[in-house]
Length: 459
Length: 165
Image 1 (cartoon, helix red, strand yellow):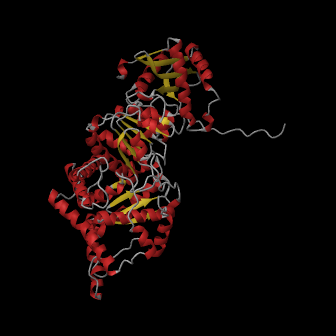
Image 2: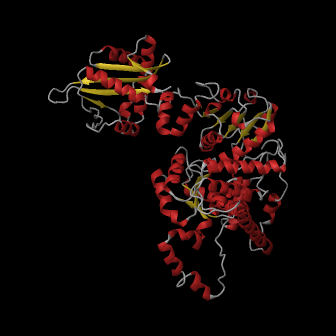
Image 3: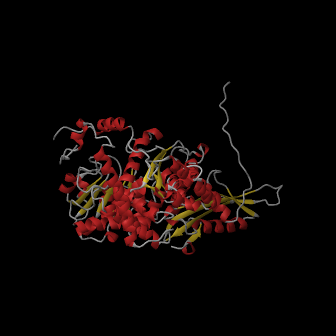
């Protein structure tokens, strides 16, 4: 194994060098003073008067149609925990970068101190007029469930919590293709979910909506299998009603478990999706052996998956996915959120339903299938940028079908619009690189970043 | 299974009394969530078993269980309380109510309350009341939906420990 790359250090260096990573830039001509009378006073009073009468026109007279906030209180940032709003800032700014680069969506980080759920919600309601959508991020569980549910009810713009819906959607897409490869019907599969945080609780709901019987699902949290006879079940009803509901609906899964932990849950499972804590060996090899033939193992913890792919395969797993970009089958929510927002912004959808997320997952899976899926390719990668307008279109069409779109377009129109918006961002960036308007990275860092990713076993 | 097919009756066997005692502990464990003054003693099971025995035997008590396919899935305990100066005396007060999570949201608690109210009326009760932790909002909306209204407020504070001997 070669020298280990210190990403923390490189990242700090480049953040200092560029002083953050996004900026606001004009998209209109403003090269003579005359334009100021158009874009600012006195002319701007014209659009203002229209908007005072009809606030809805803000989606046509301002950038609101394409503008979202990436909102966090910094209570659960990456694997770092509660590190506060400033701690969350570079993550949110990074998310905004991905929104623009991959979805052509203008996004700003909005980190704040409103940790109290009602205050958090009030903040969203108060700033709603500025934005066309809200992407929530890195909020502690179970608060995040309440905030998402309530925000979806109270706001008239789409609200998405990426740690829940983004991760769940890309996981579903991966499961769809994994099921195809092993020749099983996903709807009849038995699936163990390890970890009951934002991602897996959202996945549970998505799988149920997809058509999987809750009795064929079993969920394990840090205290063991969720089932209705658990000692803390009534406490869960009050403190975490999402877990409570899972316990009651799954009844401990297909084995009627009334205790036990990860190995008990994995017994007889066709697939396991772990989104729990960094491994390795959170999931043991011998537990994979308890699974059905052609087992599917998704180990999504970062930076180290719950089980290394080679260990899972040695124990009989047929398809393994992780959260890592240097291993095959990366389950990466960056495949989802830029496209979903591109889609809902383009049709001005009122909300993002679970069925819209399923439509996005199915399209993501279809895109990879058309390219030719195999054990080590069940999901597209972020480099295949054409996947974004495809998924955007599928999401938008579903919004239209559900009567949630304020703007209606045909499939071709949607695709062309999404394609053009995303392509124009790529073209602009290309130009900035070429002309040096975006400064080239310092030579020592460039060498590292542009070197081939080492195919390695272990970190 | 629908609540109508469930038997609501006093516990009849040692096994049912045992299960009722277990539910009693679970009921109080929920209350622990709301205020430290609801904290149970260490090892509450044997105490609960004795309490259940008393509830089953005492003249002014009503103890009922919901039984589905031979298994106890719910419990209610109420008592008749006298205050001779009030016209509404005696009052039937429901003090403990618990339904197993797998049997919730299908009207079991409602049936337990109806049957307990009947028994309390037979013992002379002129009105029925329910006691539960002030902060239990689930209970508040549950009883409101059944037509109950707030009557008594109980305020509480710990007594300071004595300093002088």
